[in-house]
Picture 1 (cartoon, one colour):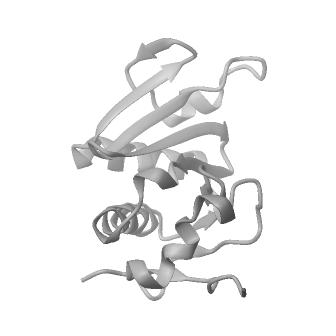
Picture 2 (picture 1 turned 90 degrees about the vertical axis):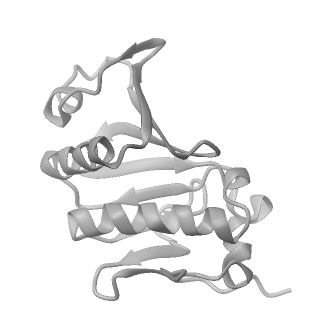
Length: 161
């Protein structure tokens, strides 16, 4: 069963409204939460690639990547949920887990279900909300994994015409 129906949330995946790369984040995180997400990715069997700049390397422990020097290049972790659905984690700060998705890859019910399944897996593993916000519009989420409801919920209705 789907958390959300495409017809109800299609506006949240509109490139003109959201930008192509909305911000997805888990606020109030810790190094331990980051490690839990890395462990989830490892256990899931999702294809992934960790890199620092152009250098691809094995995924390090969260503590190591988050304690790099301030002037070091920001690493990223690319995780393919399916061959056509990619999320990219940025290791900017221990107190917030953030990642990007490309809305062009999330069109239709099947891909929405994949994305919601991922948000649910992360939220369940951490016992925390996972928020999706328009690109650069922190503080105004349109979707959220709700821990108490144990599902992804819609927070914003379609724009008024």
